[in-house]
Image (cartoon, rainbow, N blue to C red; front, side):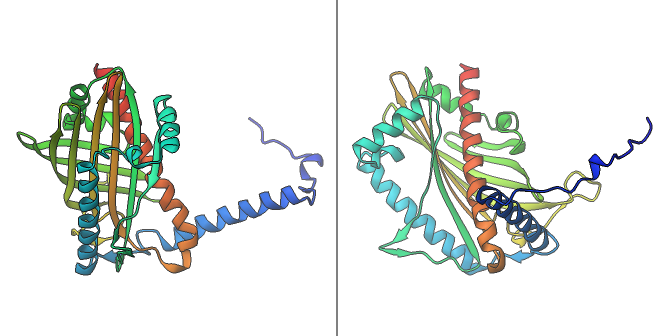
Length: 300
């Protein structure tokens, strides 16, 4: 094919009318390009190394203890799901949305007394999501959640490898390889201990705690290898997950609460990166619940 010849019409200058709407669009475009440039410069693996410090781990453990103390108290009071703690009008509104196929997601925060728990050298990401699966039972849902060897199929592309390592009654040891691609590609080999408990005939909970998270360098290449644990780029240092399933007469509510620990964001780009850090867990939880929803219905 012959190269296309530019005409004089092709060479006309690109003129944008100076209106308030176009100025807002131009500002959004410039901000996006700046965000991408700053993220690539300061958040690339070569530019953003970090080591996990003992005081960061201690602060995460304090946060988890505060959260679990509060949630255990709520369960004893009958507030099993996030909607149970809402005012009546709000609860009914969220229930209608969730039962119509929506996924409810909310960011949470734990406190010691009235005080925020400081996390030196780290950031805690605490989110909860809720969905409803019609026409299924608690047992059918648990069967899918306990089928760890199939997680790589149920939750792809976020989970690339999954393997049940050990099983003893309600206790499970699991290996998952997480995959995330945005500006950079992140692959994490993760080992977890999972424990299930029952609350009557219609309610069940699982608690999952990471025991080992290792970032993978050069994934998929001949020289693929793991960074030393805790001496990496801090994309994920700790991960706790709390699944809760409640059976109703016409289906089940499925809730996932996640507490994750990552490194801090350099102050120079925090205003650009923080919105991204909030969008990632929202989209991940949404995909997680949607994958569960689809897998349970398919297995029925």
